[in-house]
Length: 167
Ligand SMILES: [Zn+2]
Image (tube, rainbow, N blue to C red; front, side, top):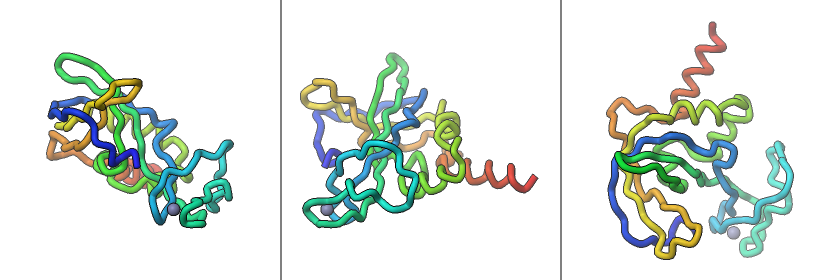
């Protein structure tokens, strides 16, 4: 599992989120063993997982999504890209990847909105540099919002869409 890979040295820095790649926020894993499943081609908007998402080990096509997010962040001195896996991404989003995509299905602009909501948010991030730096991104091992007023993206989205519909 990618998330379990241990990187090299970890260091803690104050990072401001500049942007995140909202077009590619997650990947599919087997719901039982959490092995990464190959990405199917084409877009399926149906609730049923396509048969191509078959886990050969568990012989099931029961899948779930996990977050995997590329983000551009800035410290005092530099701007760089980090990769953020499920556990940390849940801090930013306030929900699981499946919950977010269920929400986004009814609110197609959620991805763009998330980018705007999280832009400029400041976190104390523990960053883990890969041991061999071949095309691997620095991984965010943990993220703690600096502001006590931070609200996860899904909360802001739910409130926004609720007020939009009730007005
Ligand atoms: Zn499996």
